[in-house]
Image 1 (tube, rainbow, N blue to C red):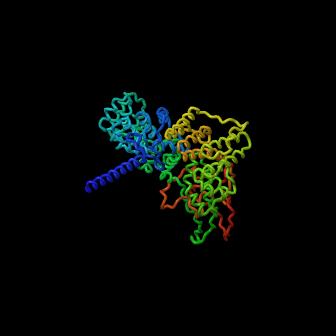
Image 2 (image 1 turned 120 degrees about the vertical axis):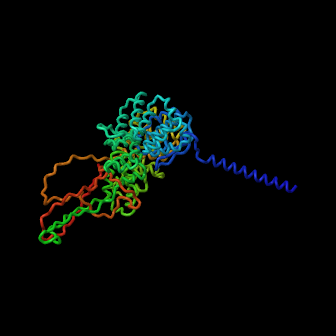
Image 3 (image 1 turned 30 degrees about the vertical axis):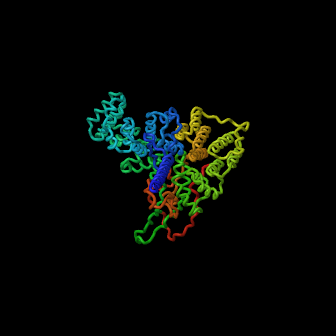
Length: 627
């Protein structure tokens, strides 16, 4: 009996332990991120971006989501939107209501937005990819964009893919086959596929010309194209000339493919590579490591002209005194000039990101080396970078107060600032036009989470102009998506509402609703970033270039040395130590105003029997803040 009771007791303890283990397992499954088995669970955030929560597609309206995926493009001029939209598209989660076509639309948007390496990784995380010919065709295009021609053409030989695509009325499959044949050196088979594609309605003559150029020399090569993976890989195979507009207005997806192309830096001259990397960084498709290549390099060592010698007395006797070279301006002036010349929100945000680490190091180690006149714009750079501690450290040292809007942005980043900055910003407005803009700014700040207290009464103050704007349907869709709590839908609609708009000219009411919708679905950090960039863009002061004045001819004896031809030693570094920094690409000339020019042959001064020490006059600042 005792043995029987012992067995019963043991069994009871085992069952209790098992039930506890099952309960613990259930709790673990419930608390783990939801991973879908289908294509919605695929995720591959671009380098430097975090993935959003797995519930981002829950509550989304299928029709609205399909239109957003179809219409969203890479022309996102708010840096915050570049990050937000790509976070949403490349993050996986539980599937919303909708069919497989909706899932495919997400992957098509990923190919369109870039970066190409993230799109390729995204397809690699799709389970049972080979079961969906439509997704395979998109994966092939992504592989072509990433320079993985062998992988892309390997998909062409997948079992059943030929039969599935032969039923399609589109010529895309035949164009893909023509591309693979051309890359493999099979010109006859490539031309046959081009002819078959024309039989299916393909009317673009570029494909046939590109196949011919990739197969051998031609007298009239086609222009370079990067609007698809096939076009890009054929352009690279045929070594077509890059268009000049690519560095100023190039498609971000094509740019990301180019700067990640195997041996890209060796295929093109350095003066063409650097602008492409800069444009890719401004449009949000460059990786953090690629951005780091754009950091301003250290100043070169001084180049002193060789002294003239008397041939009769030997080289030991100097016939002339070496010319005095004025000292280089403080590096902070170079930074300030570079920032002020960035005339777009994308450009200024990029320069601020590149400058942040070096500026922080200078503030901590040698703040006395920062001229007072540069402090306001360097504080603005800290605000663009979202670093409140650095911005405050520069503000307290500046004898020049920050603008009211900059103080408003500083308060927006400070969770304990209260509502006084908003009130001061409104009170500083002295006419109806500035009052209307101040109220718009306050609307953005309040939507981003700043306390309102009694300030909301300003919105109904009589005599002020109404805030009006378009896109009523888009704002309504944003509000409804926020009410459903759909993070992904809100992120895409915010990008769609502000797509192609410069931050400084964007509709204030649309921005306010977008910021409020982001906060409502839990994307508070992204909401603050969007509001911060809008307000900073409104306060950008871009210097205008004056017409060069005619300069009278000067005598070679009295001509002063060119300050740009040499630089004096400086204990300040403009970049991180070489041990922790990748090899820098030479930045664009527009972003490097103080880049030394090649030194010309020095002018010979008349011989002086007794060279006297000359007193250096204080140098004038090389940069003045824009008014």
